[in-house]
Length: 167
Image (cartoon, rainbow, N blue to C red; front, side):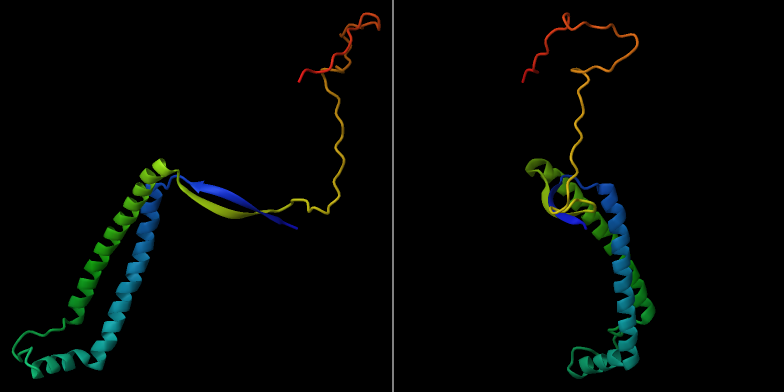
């Protein structure tokens, strides 16, 4: 059974190069979705005939004259305009995201970063009710050196008295 513990982490730096790569992909996907949505919405509006009824309404109330150029662009002009604006939006938002990462790095140097509390799962932690194995006592090498063939033998009368370690 896994146990969970709370861990505090501090985000001190965000790599601007990584932000540039991730935000360019993110904003490209978002803008492609928005541009396709606008083009699909416009094709439904144009097929329903709303632009021509809008021109007729503006002509009836006197804001539009019948000989003027149409208020509503055709589909090709709308697609080119949305593609140009989409490209500009991707470049602008990617630049703003990268600039935000650089600004965060400068500010986090002064204030210490963003502190986040994370719940971390410890996979094989013993539960409080689990049996604990006894720890095997290991003899210290300094108090009882290993016996070797080349080590001189010390007689009991010649051996210095063992002193307790100083704390």
